[in-house]
Length: 133
Image 1 (cartoon, rainbow, N blue to C red):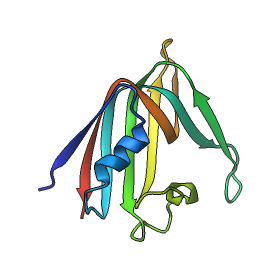
Image 2 (tube, rainbow, N blue to C red):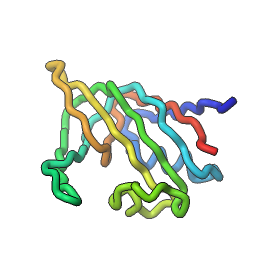
Image 3 (tube, rainbow, N blue to C red):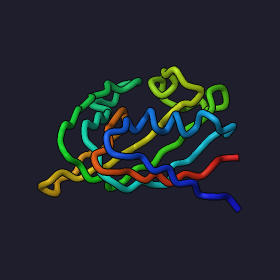
C-alpha cells in the first residue's frame, strides 16, 4: 500500500520552490499530487487559446487573495517522464518535471483554473502526494 505524504507550505513561501525543496532529497521516479487545500496569491495560470498544434498558450497573472479549490498534478524525475509532458514543464533547473493543474475561487465566488505556473502561499497550503513506483 502506498503512503500519502503531506507537504505543508507556509505563508509567503513560493509553492514551486517548496515542492522542489521537498523532493530534493527524495529518490522518487515520480509523484502524483492528489490534492491541495489552502490559500494563495500571485498566481500565474496558463490555458490554450486555440486548437493549433501546438496550441497558443495564454498566461494570466492574478495578484489577489485566492482560495485553492483544486490542485492536482504529476512530477517526474527528468529522463523518466512520459513523452506527452509539455515542453515548458521540462524547462527548469531541478531534477524534476512539473505538471500541475489548479482551480481557485475569488472573493466573489467566481472561479479561475488552468495549468499552474507559479504562486505564493497566502496563509498556508497543504499538498497531499503519493510516490509513483
